[in-house]
Amino acid sequence: MTPPSFSCLPRLVALLLTGLALTACQVAGGARQAPILGGAVTMGLPAGYCIDRSASRETAETAVVIMGRCNSAASAVPAIVTATVGRPGSAGVMTASPAQLAAFFATAEGRATLSRDGKARDVRLISALTSGNALLLHLVDRKQGEYWRAFVGTGGRLVSISASGTPGIPLAPEAGRQVLDAFVAALSSANASR
Image (cartoon, rainbow, N blue to C red; front, side):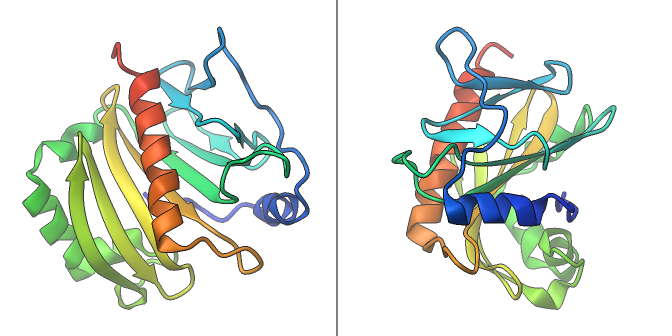
């Protein structure tokens, strides 16, 4: 579930720091949406955010979508938002109760799943809660710092969304939670008919 490192990610960070426009903002019928995996999932985009297609990746079954502010004039909070879309059927894990999911992510195996380098000791779970059909995790990662991450089932696929800042432009946990909530709501709205 952890997104791999991409050679384009430093470019995204540079874009966020300099305020240049991200690529491939898509507006469909007035709504800010982008089809992912041939339309299997539609990524909803809150106002002011765009997808960086050059940093995002899709395979035949999964995708990692990197998003950020469209430009420095946007009123959106500067953040790097990563959405990982799982294989068909992967949303089945969301049938577990929130308490069971939170208990899993508190274990060494669960923390290793959340870690960027696969090391459980690098991640600490602060709290876990539900919001609608999403599980929200408040985490501390040794490399990433304190941030929020959401898991939600969409179109039978597990989607993980995280919001973080950069060393040059940190994202306070409260602001990260607001960004995350906006992306979860946009994803839910864009896939309401599924």
